Length: 184
Image (cartoon, rainbow, N blue to C red; front, side, top):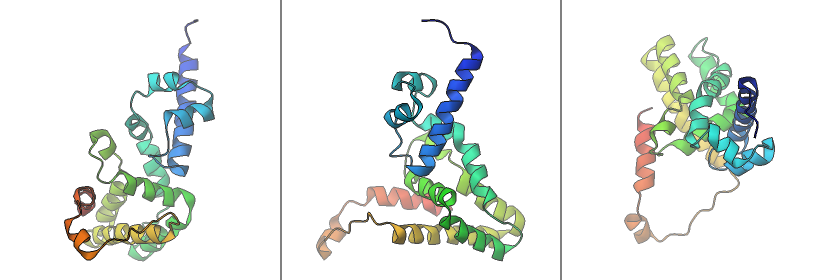
Protein backbone atom coordinates (compact mmCIF):
# COMPACT_ATOMS: atom_id res chain seq x y z
CA UNK A 1 0.00 0.00 0.00
CA UNK A 2 1.38 3.42 -0.95
CA UNK A 3 2.18 5.85 1.84
CA UNK A 4 -0.36 8.64 2.10
CA UNK A 5 0.82 12.22 2.01
CA UNK A 6 0.36 14.50 5.00
CA UNK A 7 -2.24 16.48 3.03
CA UNK A 8 -4.23 13.33 2.24
CA UNK A 9 -4.11 12.25 5.87
CA UNK A 10 -5.30 15.67 7.01
CA UNK A 11 -8.11 15.56 4.45
CA UNK A 12 -9.18 12.14 5.76
CA UNK A 13 -9.15 13.36 9.37
CA UNK A 14 -11.19 16.43 8.43
CA UNK A 15 -13.74 14.28 6.59
CA UNK A 16 -14.09 12.03 9.64
CA UNK A 17 -14.36 15.00 12.02
CA UNK A 18 -16.96 16.76 9.86
CA UNK A 19 -19.10 13.64 9.82
CA UNK A 20 -18.55 13.00 13.54
CA UNK A 21 -19.74 16.54 14.33
CA UNK A 22 -22.78 16.05 12.13
CA UNK A 23 -23.61 12.73 13.79
CA UNK A 24 -22.97 13.95 17.34
CA UNK A 25 -25.44 16.78 16.76
CA UNK A 26 -28.01 14.67 14.93
CA UNK A 27 -27.76 11.12 16.28
CA UNK A 28 -26.13 11.85 19.63
CA UNK A 29 -23.04 10.39 21.26
CA UNK A 30 -24.52 7.00 22.07
CA UNK A 31 -25.85 6.38 18.54
CA UNK A 32 -22.75 7.56 16.70
CA UNK A 33 -20.41 4.64 16.06
CA UNK A 34 -17.45 3.66 13.95
CA UNK A 35 -19.91 1.83 11.72
CA UNK A 36 -22.15 4.88 11.17
CA UNK A 37 -19.08 7.01 10.49
CA UNK A 38 -17.67 4.41 8.10
CA UNK A 39 -20.93 4.14 6.20
CA UNK A 40 -21.22 7.92 5.83
CA UNK A 41 -17.59 8.62 4.90
CA UNK A 42 -16.62 5.50 2.98
CA UNK A 43 -13.58 5.13 5.26
CA UNK A 44 -13.14 1.74 6.91
CA UNK A 45 -13.79 1.39 10.63
CA UNK A 46 -10.13 0.39 11.01
CA UNK A 47 -9.08 3.54 9.18
CA UNK A 48 -11.25 5.69 11.44
CA UNK A 49 -9.99 3.97 14.59
CA UNK A 50 -6.41 4.54 13.43
CA UNK A 51 -6.97 8.30 13.74
CA UNK A 52 -9.48 8.14 16.63
CA UNK A 53 -8.70 5.08 18.79
CA UNK A 54 -11.42 5.86 21.34
CA UNK A 55 -14.91 7.22 20.78
CA UNK A 56 -14.24 9.94 23.36
CA UNK A 57 -11.47 11.27 21.07
CA UNK A 58 -14.17 12.74 18.84
CA UNK A 59 -15.55 14.79 21.73
CA UNK A 60 -12.09 15.95 22.74
CA UNK A 61 -11.27 17.16 19.23
CA UNK A 62 -14.72 18.62 18.52
CA UNK A 63 -15.38 20.17 21.94
CA UNK A 64 -14.17 23.68 21.00
CA UNK A 65 -16.29 23.66 17.84
CA UNK A 66 -19.39 22.34 19.63
CA UNK A 67 -18.92 24.92 22.40
CA UNK A 68 -18.59 27.73 19.86
CA UNK A 69 -21.74 26.61 18.02
CA UNK A 70 -23.71 26.62 21.28
CA UNK A 71 -22.34 29.93 22.59
CA UNK A 72 -23.06 31.63 19.25
CA UNK A 73 -26.76 30.96 19.84
CA UNK A 74 -26.73 32.80 23.18
CA UNK A 75 -27.07 36.55 23.69
CA UNK A 76 -25.15 37.74 26.74
CA UNK A 77 -26.32 41.39 26.46
CA UNK A 78 -28.27 41.14 29.72
CA UNK A 79 -29.89 38.49 31.89
CA UNK A 80 -33.23 38.74 30.08
CA UNK A 81 -31.78 38.27 26.62
CA UNK A 82 -29.59 35.44 27.87
CA UNK A 83 -32.63 33.62 29.20
CA UNK A 84 -34.65 34.26 26.03
CA UNK A 85 -31.83 33.18 23.73
CA UNK A 86 -31.22 30.01 25.76
CA UNK A 87 -34.89 29.03 25.55
CA UNK A 88 -34.90 29.90 21.85
CA UNK A 89 -31.77 27.77 21.29
CA UNK A 90 -33.69 24.68 22.42
CA UNK A 91 -36.04 25.25 19.47
CA UNK A 92 -33.12 25.05 17.02
CA UNK A 93 -31.49 21.73 16.15
CA UNK A 94 -27.94 22.70 17.13
CA UNK A 95 -28.79 24.11 20.55
CA UNK A 96 -31.18 21.27 21.32
CA UNK A 97 -28.64 18.61 20.32
CA UNK A 98 -25.81 20.24 22.29
CA UNK A 99 -28.01 20.17 25.38
CA UNK A 100 -29.05 16.57 24.69
CA UNK A 101 -25.39 15.67 24.24
CA UNK A 102 -24.58 17.33 27.57
CA UNK A 103 -27.31 15.45 29.40
CA UNK A 104 -26.37 12.14 27.77
CA UNK A 105 -22.80 12.57 29.03
CA UNK A 106 -23.80 13.44 32.60
CA UNK A 107 -22.74 10.66 34.89
CA UNK A 108 -20.24 9.20 32.43
CA UNK A 109 -17.12 8.45 34.42
CA UNK A 110 -14.71 8.60 31.48
CA UNK A 111 -12.26 11.45 32.13
CA UNK A 112 -12.12 12.34 28.44
CA UNK A 113 -15.89 12.77 28.25
CA UNK A 114 -15.88 15.08 31.27
CA UNK A 115 -13.95 17.53 29.08
CA UNK A 116 -17.18 18.44 27.22
CA UNK A 117 -17.39 22.11 28.07
CA UNK A 118 -20.15 23.83 26.06
CA UNK A 119 -22.54 24.23 28.98
CA UNK A 120 -19.74 24.95 31.46
CA UNK A 121 -18.46 27.77 29.24
CA UNK A 122 -21.94 29.30 29.02
CA UNK A 123 -22.19 29.23 32.81
CA UNK A 124 -18.69 30.67 33.14
CA UNK A 125 -19.41 33.51 30.71
CA UNK A 126 -22.68 34.32 32.50
CA UNK A 127 -20.77 34.53 35.78
CA UNK A 128 -18.12 36.80 34.23
CA UNK A 129 -20.77 39.09 32.75
CA UNK A 130 -23.40 39.13 35.51
CA UNK A 131 -21.82 37.62 38.60
CA UNK A 132 -23.69 35.20 40.82
CA UNK A 133 -27.05 36.14 39.25
CA UNK A 134 -25.79 35.03 35.83
CA UNK A 135 -24.47 31.79 37.23
CA UNK A 136 -27.78 31.11 39.00
CA UNK A 137 -29.69 31.87 35.81
CA UNK A 138 -27.70 29.36 33.75
CA UNK A 139 -28.01 26.76 36.50
CA UNK A 140 -31.78 27.22 36.43
CA UNK A 141 -31.82 27.12 32.63
CA UNK A 142 -29.98 23.80 32.67
CA UNK A 143 -32.74 22.34 34.82
CA UNK A 144 -35.50 23.91 32.73
CA UNK A 145 -33.82 22.57 29.60
CA UNK A 146 -33.83 19.05 31.00
CA UNK A 147 -37.55 19.28 31.74
CA UNK A 148 -38.31 20.80 28.32
CA UNK A 149 -36.30 18.16 26.48
CA UNK A 150 -37.96 15.36 28.46
CA UNK A 151 -41.41 16.73 27.68
CA UNK A 152 -40.55 16.90 23.96
CA UNK A 153 -39.31 13.32 23.85
CA UNK A 154 -41.67 10.85 22.24
CA UNK A 155 -39.59 7.82 23.19
CA UNK A 156 -40.14 7.94 26.93
CA UNK A 157 -41.40 4.72 28.45
CA UNK A 158 -42.65 5.14 31.98
CA UNK A 159 -42.20 1.92 33.93
CA UNK A 160 -45.11 0.78 36.03
CA UNK A 161 -43.62 0.39 39.50
CA UNK A 162 -45.24 -0.28 42.82
CA UNK A 163 -44.52 2.15 45.66
CA UNK A 164 -42.28 -0.35 47.49
CA UNK A 165 -40.25 -0.95 44.29
CA UNK A 166 -39.43 2.74 44.10
CA UNK A 167 -37.84 2.62 47.55
CA UNK A 168 -35.65 -0.39 46.84
CA UNK A 169 -34.70 0.26 43.23
CA UNK A 170 -30.98 0.92 42.57
CA UNK A 171 -30.48 4.63 41.96
CA UNK A 172 -26.70 4.64 41.45
CA UNK A 173 -26.80 5.94 37.88
CA UNK A 174 -29.34 8.62 38.76
CA UNK A 175 -27.27 9.67 41.75
CA UNK A 176 -24.12 10.00 39.64
CA UNK A 177 -25.98 12.10 37.08
CA UNK A 178 -27.35 14.33 39.82
CA UNK A 179 -23.85 14.71 41.26
CA UNK A 180 -22.59 15.95 37.89
CA UNK A 181 -25.53 18.31 37.49
CA UNK A 182 -25.06 19.67 41.02
CA UNK A 183 -21.75 21.14 39.87
CA UNK A 184 -23.77 23.50 37.73
